[in-house]
Amino acid sequence: MVAYHAEDRLHVIALARTCRRFTRGLADLLDAIRVLEPESPQVDALAAIIDEL
Image (cartoon, rainbow, N blue to C red):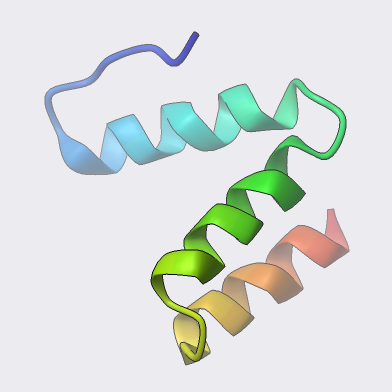
């Protein structure tokens, strides 16, 4: 369960932290984001960060 935060930035951080608790959690999150933004440099940057983790 993702902790709710009224501030968007804090809610996104809580979402990422929750995903990290699960095997492939961040990879699955990235897959979902790529559905929304398939050709985005920002998503490519996020993928690089997730790969480093």
